[in-house]
Amino acid sequence: MSAALILEILIKSAVLIGGLMTAAAYFVLLERRMAAWTQDRIGPSRVGIPLTNWRLWGLGQPLADGAKMMLKEDYTPAHVDRRLYILAPLAILAAAIAVSAVIPFGSVLPPMTIGGEKIGPIHLTVAPGVDVGMIYVFALSSIAVYGVILGGWASNNKYSFIGGLRSSAQLIAYELPMGLGILGVVLAAGSLDLERIMDYQANYGWFALAQPLGFVVFLVAAFAEAARLPFDLPEAEQELIGGYHTEYAGMKLLLFLVAEFLHMIVASFLIVILFFGGWHLPIITGDPDAATVSWFTAIARILVLHAKIFLVIVFFMWVRWSWPRFRFDQLMNLAWKIMLPLGLANFVAIAILYELRKVNDPTESSLAWTVGIIAASWLVFAVAWLATSLSNPLVTDNRPRRDLSAAGVDSQI
Amino acid sequence: MKPDDPNIKWIEEPRLGLAGKMYLPLVADGLTTTFKHLTKSLLGETVTVSYPDEEPKIGNPQIYRGVHRLNKDQAGRVKCVACFLCATACPAHCIDIIAEPSPWPDREKYPQSFSIDELRCIYCGMCEEACPVDAIELTSLYNLTGRSREEMIFDKEKLLSVFDMTKDKEPMQSPALGGTAT
Image (tube, rainbow over all chains, first blue to last red):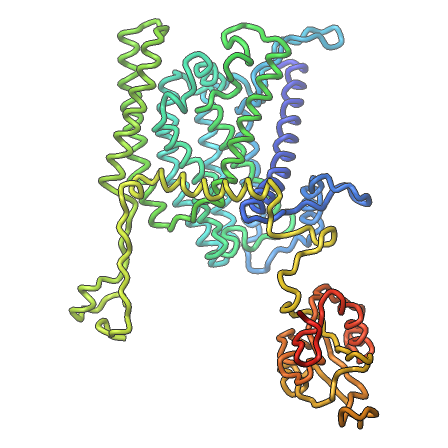
């Protein structure tokens, strides 16, 4: 490995981590403003540049929040398991950052000359060309669960522990539908490499369009994996105070909160890359098969990718105030009785459709087949959705039974 | 509680229709509701205000329960007749009156001193209700601050000055008792 390559990777890591941290801080502000707007309030809009009257719509708020968190006493309660207590936030943050190593934050930069030395096209991924990219993402996002469980266990507190337990059950349950949602994409694109999945979509249409059922299953699972409302049971404030981070304060709490936002950002990256074509937008992002790109195309691709991610994150925040939280049994029912069968249906349908295409259209160039697959998968979506909702609606009737009560049978009254 | 108790009202939950079972229409419903609020707020129609820059609007100042004032009559004298009804009605015991024989022929007593501890007051408005001559009233001044506890005990002069401050904006209530409210 040459020095230039190491330098390139270091620069990319610095840009990525710096960008992610800044983004997380500002998404906290955006989340608070969105919350305020949904509730007809104004929201934090006063902190601007210190010692001046410039308010800048509250853009100084993340700095103030960060300073507040860092200046707080880093208090460790006496009853905790000290080593695990310190390890938990580190594990969750390390996992959240490490996931982003294989996630492309753009396409490629064109070749350039710096100091007389020619530098080839730079892939905007810290670790480009990882063939098992998706598996790596999955493996590391499962490690993030460790942080939550360790935090809940080490805190030695009932609420934290219940939060950790809920989190582990929820994440195990939703790992499956998430995997099934991705399986269709991987099958169609023929690769686990995120960059190649994006290239495929640039040529054959976005997977959100071509595999609507897989998209819905993945979207729901992504919300659950990021522990966002309506699936935020690990830290349901009304029930568990703060869930697994109840006993944390100061910097350690900050690490947990940042990791939570990084999860959401990574989930949005995955949604965009797997289902919305990544950097691809017709016309302005250039020919996806071209060997080299111009500077205009390279920058347009970066902007398109990040605009899409921004929109997905806004959707995450919008959803947060739109629907009530699931009860835990409903959450489990949704995962095992609805999302799992739907994911399987999607997987089988996609496998059959793409195999048929391979047999009848070996060059994969016929437009009729592309359109046909899209139409067929929407049909599958409609039929499967209707079938699950009619056969197994998410209804648990736990009202006291009037007939039993009237008959004098001891019931739940 | 017995199951056949007539006081129990049994309510049947409405059954989910097809749209409810499909879930997606309800999802869209929730998103539409929040989207309406989002756009409304972004257009500036919020219910909160940026307080020090912008004063909140008080719906009806006549019924708002803020800082007290002691009303004056036409001759500029304090209207209070030192009957102690307000001090008796006060659930927080924050009104302290020292009465003296009145120098004026139209009443027996007048308050030599009249003080309200604004920190003890719970702003319930009972004093206003009890007063037979409408001498004590609650104004719509809501931003009451002070640097010490002593400063927050308003004496007669201070309460009369609150009247001078607010009499134009908030006329005295009940014309039957000499008020100027319309």
